[in-house]
Length: 355
Ligand code: CUA
Image (cartoon, rainbow, N blue to C red):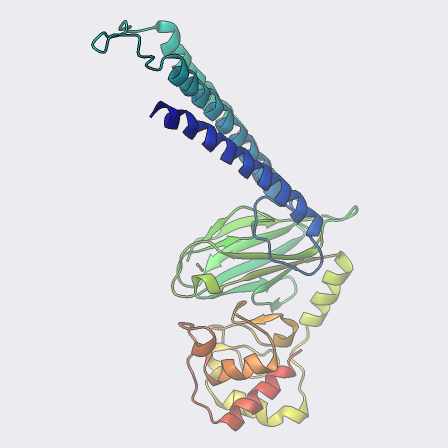
């Protein structure tokens, strides 16, 4: 038995060291891999913003302290197991000397942890204050985020449009801050907005506005997800944050601002779209469609995915979606309209022109 007890803390220690090494390696590799393509890493070990870096460093510090404590205690345990093990030379019924009370030891294990907790508390407060200062410094861009079951509406009041599921922000460069202040609200239940590489989680609560700041100097497409269970498609509400240089961001704004194109070639599809219940839930700016229950479709084809990340945005998937959304995203709040196939095709042809 002593043999087994000796092994176990050492094995755990080795495993912890291996995990730490792996974490270090993967973080470095991920930072190196960050490119302009969609970055699927949803890892707090590859921070790409000041606040995510602060959280990451705080995590490493807490981890280091916890590992140090583990080493001290496991070491003392290991030492005691070996040093005071039964050697077979003491009579079985003879007790070792019983010692009660030691002021020095009592003090050590009271004051030690107290100091550690105090130090951690002060560091956390410093991080909170720093994040708070960052949030009140001159913001560049205001975005209203409204969470829905199960998609995200990103509204740009300054520019007068809504861009569902894809949040575009300018990157911070040598001349400008690309800081975006998000004001988060929910249309239904509690959600949580989380883009691990850019910031911590923020709850999105109906009727209660929370704010957070996103900022990064690295252009890229950062993925995030809802981090509070909100129903059947909780996992089906992808956040794509497109961080792009100032000029690209301005070009994107310019492309999103105009009303929808009016292509006479798809007049039948537009008529079918407007004659059905589509218009009660969706907005297509420049047309009578002004519903707000579902995502704005004015520039639908500028987006990479449909159904908040459940499928690529292409003709085949749009056909499936318009025929019966429940086959693409079970549980979503858009019902099958039971349209004849030729109407579905006409509507999709129309949607495909909404660039
Ligand atoms: Cu929204 Cu979980």
